[in-house]
Every structure is written in C-alpha cells, then in structure tokens.
Length: 263
Ligand SMILES: [Zn+2]
Image 1 (cartoon, rainbow, N blue to C red):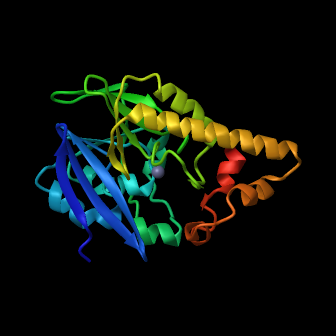
Image 2 (image 1 turned 135 degrees about the horizontal axis):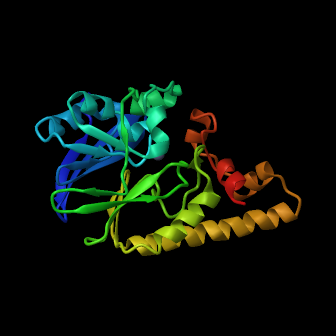
C-alpha cells in the first residue's frame, strides 16, 4: 500500500497528515496534536501511517470536531488503548454504532468502527493551552471548532475547507454555515487549522471571503427563484459542469444541495 504521509511542527502544534487515494483522487487528512491532546483521529484507511506515528506518541485525549468517518476512523482503536475520546454531545449515541457507509466512502476512508465517547466540556485544558469548544453548525448540525485564544489558533475540522465551494456534502446546510461564519468572525483568532488543507494563515480574511461568496451566491439563487426557476434549474444554470464525484457519490456531494440550502 504505502500511503503517503508526513509529520511536523507548526507554532508548537504537532501536525500529522496522511493521503487517502481513490483512482486519481488524493485527499489529505490532517490531525493536530496540542500537548497531550489530539484533534480528530483520521480515517481507517490511513490507520497504518497513523499508528506508525502515534503508536509511540499515544495522546491522553482525543477531541472530535464531528463524526464523519475521515475524522474518527481510529477512535475505536484509540479508545481500546485507553485514550479518552471526547465528542460533541449530539454525536455520542451515533458513535456507538458502526454505520453502513456507501461504497465510494468505504473505498476512500474505510470503516468507521463503533466507539464510546464522553461529551466535550466547554473548555479542554492541556498542559500549556486552553481549548475552548465553539459550536459551529453547518458542515453537520453538531460540528464544533476548538479555539486557543492566547495563540489565535482555530481548529475547524471540516467547517472551512474552501472559501469558494462548488459542491457540498449532503449533511451541510449553507444557511446555517453563513450564520456560524458570522459567529466565527467575532472570535479572536488568526490561524485556521483545517482538517484537509492544513494550517491556513489570515483565517478571518478567508472566512470573510467565504461568507461574501455564499451571500452573493444566495442573492443569485433568490433572484432566479423570483424568476420562477426550480432549484434543479437554478443549479444547472449556476453550476453547469458536474464533477465526477457528484455521480460517484450518487448526489451525496452536489452543487444542487448548495442551491437547496441557500434560503
Ligand atoms: Zn466532515
């Protein structure tokens, strides 16, 4: 197999990344270590490089941003080794059952074994840092981010990903995303630590860009609705080119979902 992976340090944060592959797609997953705490736990498909690094650096706790399988595929094994798993309240029950994932997700991310998690408190104190748990619904209804105020770090899981999305996952609601971005822009932070893009400088400017793009898109969607177009027609007009992943995922990833949730 030999999955590509790497590790390093950035401003004192331990960074581990692995690349999962499906056909010509290569998707990176980042996991961050703050002192003895790990933020997210990568996918099952990346378990070999994950354990190659973390076997000898077992964290005390893992904080999960949300329950998608590319963020908690190794949570079950970590729990077995005595690591405490902390997850958003809304994810606790769901975590106890291994989901049946569609084939394309199993191929790229692998399984998401069941695990026991405890609910995240308001603040997680590590040896040298304090991570404030910030609810950021949007990507999923229960998403949280972790803010290290003193350093200006914001660990966002999948909440940011890109300033200009052209398709979203079916769990996302862009109207909710927009209001969470407004909340995020009131937070004292400068660096985004994204789960697929790595550390991103100028965090507030990136979130402003994303908000402005989504608001403009919402205006265009609303104008076309007023002209009497259906959401499907609006989607064809605004996003005429459909990426392969929309077909492969049977619409789980689609621009139509963007149009539908911009209200
Ligand atoms: Zn996700």
